[in-house]
Image (cartoon, rainbow, N blue to C red):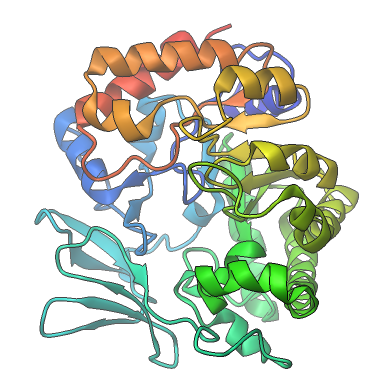
Length: 415
């Protein structure tokens, strides 16, 4: 059984030979570049390319082929099909002094105090990374200082936020015919020349985009106090997203197993909105997009949502959700036993298999292995699981723990 077959069987709620393993197939299942460099050093591995930090905001690295083979990784980010030429990258120094390379297309500015700014194509400062910080923070919200969502908004404004700064392949304009052919051919080649299950991140955020434009506090009030304008904004986002999805599916839908959407809907203690508000304001848009995916492709709908979203899961499933990530079991009502019992027949769990907050970062390798074994036994019963830790492996995770986690995933994931 190859990787693609293994993943497809698991997400069909059938039992493959073992639980599929993910490392870095999307921007919330990967590894920070500092942690990745430490992992390579610990293993004594020298890669063909230097560490490729494709996501500057979260400082994430693409796992190299040798690492993917060593740890039996079954999935891959479609973005790895792009930027194959070393000349499309440039050297960068990380906070610990180690080196990596970053995409040349990034527009970066340095300040005298060591702060690094991520700029739009029009040189607008959208994100900043203070010298001592490991990550980039949003520093501009186009509608934050307005009394509410404006009556009219320009489509261009909807991309004036730091999360609109692309990671591969979205540095490409797929509405340019020549570039679109390159986009399709690159993903087709990745499909034909590997047996990985391919994940293509499409974003299409709704709640999160509202917060990116208005700020969290403002948008949290908007969706209750001004539902009309909130819906108008979300309707326009969905219209734009459907145009993008049609282009994606018509070109690469047959090569991609998962279209990964993003929308963090919960915090530590519960969802950011009541189930009623979700049903009224957000669910229609999710359903429209996810129905389009299902009606026009064999792709699975994959949603990344952090936090405690237990109370929203029935509506998310009804809207067409197939796969949920990162399965943040350390939040309220998200215990793995509870999730598997109530939603295991309807959802694929992509994650939830190592406590990154407490055990992966601070535990011993033995504690990491025990945590992995326990979680696989719960979430992996009768299929329906793709192994991943709960969100990214951060910079301070000891390489010994990363190794222990991935080795345990392979050892204890066999059916």
